[in-house]
Image (cartoon, rainbow, N blue to C red; front, side, top):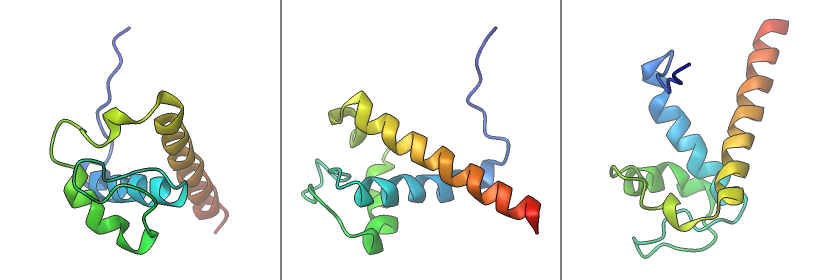
Length: 90
């Protein structure tokens, strides 16, 4: 069976991308390697970093380990599920 990474809500791409950078900054991961902004970055600036990292090939993320990238993806999923559960309980 072919796997599709098609977004159900295409407009969510920007929000997910920003969340990715915020979480990476919270974990102390070098979210902007290659732009001169490596190292631990305050989450206040994570939205601005998304503009640097979203330049196509994902060059920022290719220098990180699978474990680091997976931890960011897992945290995104955890937060999205928690938010959906909170919405259902309202």
